[in-house]
Length: 360
Image (cartoon, rainbow, N blue to C red; front, side):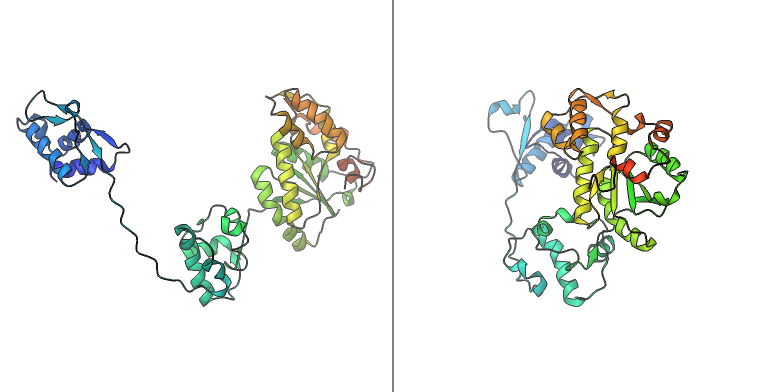
């Protein structure tokens, strides 16, 4: 490889338009061990610079300040990379879209959109009644990449109700299942955010003397909970153990309460019973020792606590505004046992009401 060719290769790795000539000279030296000590080095580098300019890869400095004239021949102190002229892309041939994708004929589509839709077009043409499969399997079939779209439900064509995952891709999402434990036959489920609180509640409920009062206990938090909620209905149907009440118990902090609101919206869209706060557990948690935590903006705090019943919301708002939070670990196993009275109906205690309908 010639010195000019090595300089040209070095240019492709540069991000700035102006490149110090020393960088290019170093690339030429690296490719020829004899060049750094050669008496002809300056002439070789000057010739390579002229060749780069002649071929249009760089522009040499126009003024005297841009040249090193301490020896002969002069060398540029820098060069400027040129922007290659745009080559007009050939006009794409008209596509014949299947009827199900007719929106593509009247919608401005990017190259990425066309890369997404073309395989679907062929798929619907050849297999319009294909059996629905998990979305990752369909992506692998059509694109050779099971994660072709990281968040398909937010893609602009899907969000605009133009592209349908069930109808066009003949596929369905498969979120990781929520960790659910059927501790008894009662028609309710309690979801707990933290693993320590989940373990403590599992021990309390597993030993509950009136086994018929106990239902499902589930563990999940954050994005996992929101994505996995849709798997609950299938589990209820498989076990022939439906629920009429779904309760959620999170940390008393902004992130936990915002997660609860998102989960409640997801449950509603999935056709699950209304997701409500486990107010009885929150009441017990509110009487424990908080820990300091930098407060969020007041408007964000007010929006987050609005998911709680009014009395709890006021207490939680003041707690968070004062720069404190309450993690579920503040209500440990022994205090949970004390708080939940074994001789009384269990669900009203979890709901913080005297009847199962108080918070619904």
